Image (cartoon, rainbow, N blue to C red; front, side):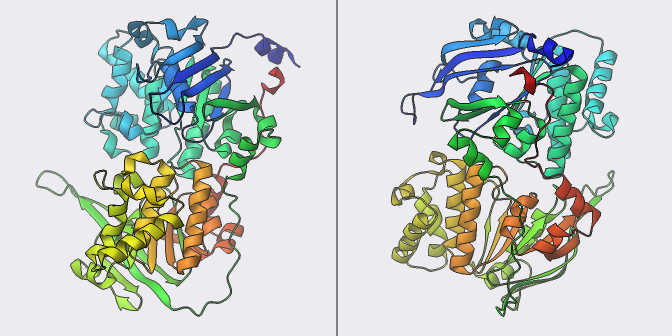
Length: 551
């Protein structure tokens, strides 16, 4: 043990949680959201709290920030010591003084956390105004410096932009700027990279490491992805149904997990191993896309110059029955726009789409020609399900609208609920009564109710826990084999694409820059952009930690 490690060993923790218990409302699936949890974070250290949805990890973060929805969800035991002060004993005004100034937080969904009608500079300025009084000129300099620190381009322009003008990765950087503008000693990150594409995630993780090293900030990082843990963690705490089941140095937990639940989470990470090439198929083509182009135009007026973005340019590919094509790329690459064109949710400018040999014309003719045989599974199943419709009605509604008798549609619905792992009682429940993974299963069942020939899945697992993601991917594979579907699987994660797809099309700024069999694209990528995506994927490499000797 060297001198610096010995010094760190005797450093007082920035955050120390001792036997924390948090109760849930009456009627919940368990009594305690968090059950006697203990952990500590040292200055300059990153502690990752890992677990599935419902494990209680976000409850710990909210308890530290004083954001629990009391009185129904509240601490009922233990201590939360920040710099030796028990936060659970502080009043709300005292907690407001700490939030932002001494403790910063980065939330999972920046578009929800940011005010859509306030400019970026104003939102960061609010954090400053809540704690200190400085002249407007100095405040603007601080805001510009904060935006530059998180690697945002042209801060002078972004300071006056609204959140919707920014990409997902840029909005998350703004959230980090808000959290760090007053240089807090503790930063809490609640799933800050879950739905980001792999390159943006890599940039955010690198940024957070650099800021932490520069400022010595203690970081409590909440995630479900052990790939992310491997990239940034010094210490790891694994939670299951409110209890800590394993903790220790990152290297020990990752390379020699002791608890079955930890091993389950690690095993659920997609391997990225390429699909074995299939034997030459004689199946007919279900989908053929020729020279497809799609451009978005906006802002063209008397005093404003129009802006155009080419989301798809000269796209060509074909797909046989039983095959899966993976469309891979970063946010803004055009992959979701391509998917919307394929199902008729967005018009395309030129090119042709042949479905089962039939040319799909634009507009209402497209839907008539498809006859419900092209279906889509969306990224957010909660937003795509009507919250006022029971699940059974949502699944059976499509076939009934196509002329299928109610008796047959309901029988089909019951069979599909069983297929996706839900009981018949699920038919009488509403979407909000299900978890995210269960809602995605319902979305798959609703799509299959139309007995489609082509299924377009748009980022269907990007926001799911790794264990739930593994279950849903297994379900997709089962459905493809059982129904011999052609599938277009849109994803930003090459690990998922490698596991699911026979062929991969890599998109960048509306153009397919690489296309071929999965094992060739992943095993010997030809385009620099493909290599960049592969290199950005978090891997379970042995982490190096300067603080593992502390335990």
